[in-house]
Image: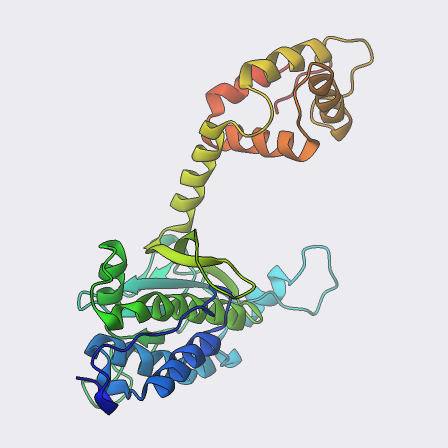
Length: 332
């Protein structure tokens, strides 16, 4: 039983928004706990751990050690330069990889590595080209076995329990209402980390956190009559997610034209006298204008997006847009 004789507390999350910061999400939880007379130990154990670790935020010790510039391959950074066409004397940002993962015990964590490395060391092709030639990862920072790895940037215990409840769409216990807020705070913490690192490093996310939402209508006197509902929370390879979304976009056919219609128009325009090169924006503008004349609503931006997607994911269909006439040989 909760404190103050409240057996089944009811959290008021009408002000919950996925766009809040990590601290904003925590303030919402703390405010509701104060209103209901709850302490952290009144929550489920995994929620208590998540709340504590999310309040701690990023681990400042490894973040500080990442700025040990004397350990960088400075000659390589100056040779690569910050901007290919910029002035000399401005070094490139050191390249790093960030890995998000759910541990075997259900804890959410982030670690950083020199580009191409992992916890077992560098890939053979990256051993010489690393921007951190003397870098080492230690499983424990101090003498104690319970200290965290030297490259760990945050650690949130108990996260897998909240993720499981979201996947099972469970809402049969009063405290489960806080799970979406805590998981969204994890996402905000990840965004906080990216923003912090990208100021000084060339960051590649080996794995990243992806949330999916759905909107529901709610009966309330508030100005807002819709609420965000967390539908999924998953750690995935960004390239895999990008490909899945790109293929889904192609399958949806939301470009204002079909592939066959584009091919017919493309060939017809390319055969006209004084036709500009098919790789130029002038030719694409002609394609858009011709499609609109046939009743197909599209824009140059939509055409560019479609061409980029089929070239990347369906190259066999992209070959339909190759012009082989003399003087016009080019691919989309």
